[in-house]
Length: 424
Image 1: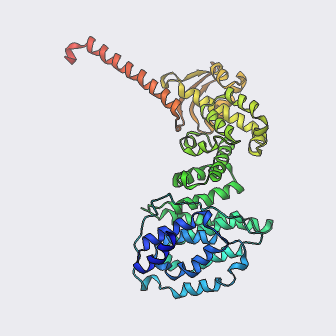
Image 2: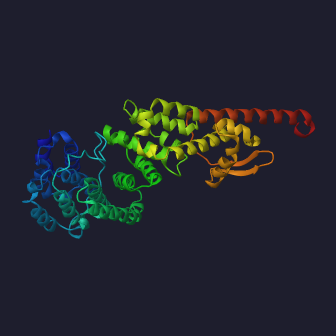
């Protein structure tokens, strides 16, 4: 049991087991009872925190920081925190701890459940983070960076203060994202991805509010690369999937939808009111204009209720036409990419006199490379921007490889039959 583990572990020096037990306890929101996490830290954990794996300790400390509901509750022990910080041995006077793996019984929650925000300004939680960061010499670079990012994530998501304070917070967070990137890159060979996950979580929250859409989308993809889906709650996954879908569709420089469709995040929309967004993403990935028009007609109220889609509707239609052109060229064999304007107009559902503009737009965005014959109304294409392919596109590519293999075999047989004296 938890109580038995807590009572026996310090005496027996079972630090890994104790760390695992504590991490499992505080990561479960059902175990939160008022200020019990605060009392757990003050009366128990603070006595031996220096003996634990410091990154795992930082995760536990984050759960304690997020448990503040009433700043008055902590008024009596914040001073004690600082006393503990000076009383604990420094790195130079204590034996280094051995890094241990996170608990294996369940995936670590990289995004711990957040309690309801307090009505009062969240100075108590910020003070707790600051008190932890006073121990940076003992914590080490990895745990310190982790807590610094969590501190700014808390400030960014707490939304305390007036508009002027908010603008300053956004400016400070932008500076943190830029300045902490070299420290993040320096963490080579780290098995635990929680620091990278928190960095990209902070970046996505910032770009979600400050923009632009394409920056949010790119950082959200990196967040997915470092964050297991089972470490997110259903609400977090649904919110992330919704925001990524909107950013991908309305972002200026996002023309590769296969990256997000290759992740399981879009599946979080299934069974929710925003399930149509997943269908819209797949429609854009294929450049299917008829499917797009059908979806917009079916979900008209939901579509135009999204400001990102309503305000950029004309741009979104232009973007879909470009994607339709790219898919048309992808499906055309590379040796036969002299495309008549009429064929492009038929595929993209555009008037014939707008095809030239569409081709020039695609070349200016470096989606394709080639040239145009305006007299004969022919588009010569030499290159199409590579993209992540879905299963249908991979199947189409496999069919083309099969055709190429048959042509190679036919050519080989022809040469063998016609020149037996050379090959015999």
